[in-house]
Length: 84
Image (cartoon, rainbow, N blue to C red; front, side):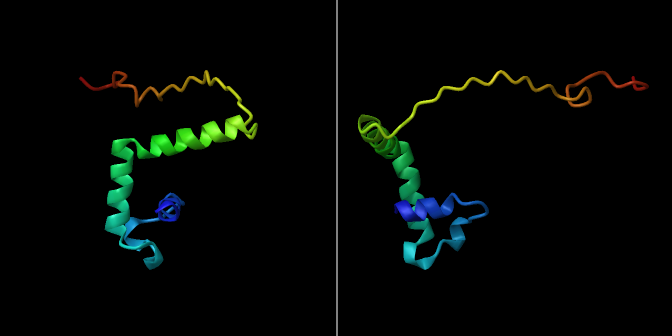
């Protein structure tokens, strides 16, 4: 299940082209979705991070992005010239 999920998240991967060794794509998709809904993935991630942090294997870095992105005037709903 973990390998099938990792395979799916590579660029361009499609569920219907999941290699047969991972089983039915519908079954893998359903299990992935159910695990996301019931919090299983969050529990797995939390446990892995906790274990790695306790073992000193993580280096925590905090970054703050203050980038401001502005839309072009034509995309921002500006009044059109010459039209009423």
